[in-house]
Image 1 (tube, rainbow, N blue to C red):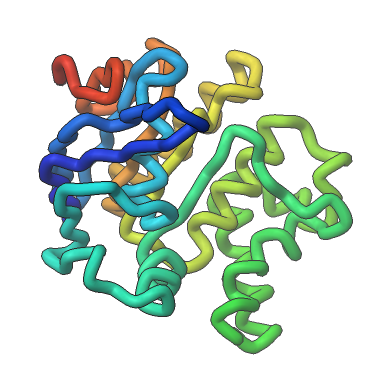
Image 2: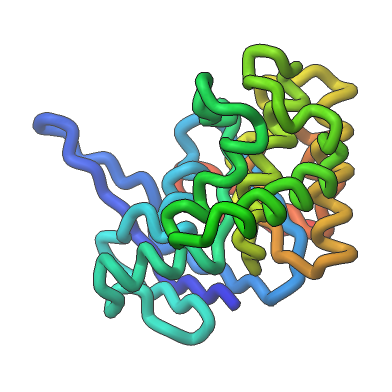
Length: 224
């Protein structure tokens, strides 16, 4: 599904040249459940952004479903993200004036899905993450764990093949973290969705089936 070879990413900060990724290679098959660990500044989020087609490498090749991502137009990249990739972030990124249901509907609006179908699909996803009873609530009326579950439902609404989660438990207490990981684990085992989690939390990483360790922009080891 994902084939990255010798991915390099360089940032120019004033007169300084920062190499965020140094010839990183990784292969991820459909249905895998993996985590990528590393300290702050190790390149984890940069790698996830490239993997999610939100950023481009300075060099190297990235094949998604055997297609070279660098050959895709902006419209094709947008379509790939919208149809095949779901994103979950540490900060939830929910719109405060929208209800949980309306937040989950947002990706479907971009696809011009009719309103009735949008609502039914969004409801189904919220029920899937255990929030069928909280659909009408605004984010401010939900706990951190519930907000993250809304974000997961939003990531699911387009039936993605891949979920990319950047520190999905970073703002949650231990109980809510466990609930979020239970949902991601279930989506992987039952729905066969590929899940990639960026984390610095060892307990989160231990829930995945494979762990990659990133340091100074390079993988240093892998464990199962």
